[in-house]
Amino acid sequence: MNRRLAQDSPAARPAAPAADRRAVVALGANLGDRAETIAAAIDELDRLPLTRLVRAAEPIETVALTLDGPDAAAPAYLNTVAIVETRLAPSVLLTYLHAIEQRHGRAPRSPEQPRWQDRPLDLDLIVHGDVVSDAPELTLPHPRAAERDFVLGPWLAVDPDAELPGRGRVDALLAALRTDAEAAP
Ligand SMILES: Nc1ncnc2c1ncn2[C@@H]1O[C@H](COP(=O)(O)OP(=O)(O)OP(=O)(O)O)[C@@H](O)[C@H]1O
Ligand SMILES: Nc1nc2c(c(=O)[nH]1)N=C(CO)CN2
Image (cartoon, rainbow, N blue to C red; front, side, top):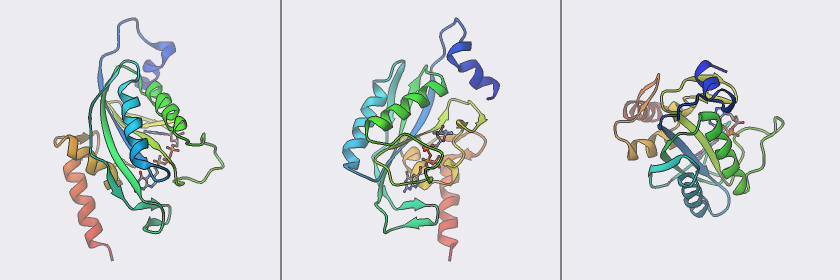
């Protein structure tokens, strides 16, 4: 775990109150009543301790990205992005995100489970202020965000000046993704 994350862990929390940081949470759902689940999850984010919702993008319907590539035959996702201001440390916020997922029927993770399974709700922490971490349990910024139009699109819609730390402006990243997609055979 890097130093910023360690300092943020409850055991090492300094006496002074933590500063508000802006965090970006990506939401996705491709099973069940997707719109209702996403709306409820956004409401739950707003009600987390030391946290307030700043903005949430209008959900968009997206083709499921599977380990074999986009699959139009798989249940489609609704995706959106919520921007919150929070005093929760990144690891604490992630624990709350997992609890929200599980309240909406997401099975607890296990190492045997294949990745990118269909799911009623997925919440990913995309950025948390300028925190950088390469810890596998919480990598920040999210390591796959720059390749995901279903994250960058909604994020750009609610923050036209958004930047992915270490990768650049979200508008430029999204334009590059779309150019690559057009050039693909
Ligand atoms: N920034 C992050 N946001 C959410 N989970 C993360 C992050 N960095 C690391 N993880 C870890 O990734 C693990 C797998 O998360 P999850 O089940 O949501 O993956 P996934 O949605 O199938 O795939 P992906 O991570 O590509 O979206 C979690 O146990 C979590 O600890
Ligand atoms: N369209 C879409 N595809 C996905 C998504 C997602 O949110 N939207 N999430 C995944 C794993 O996090 C895997 N594939």
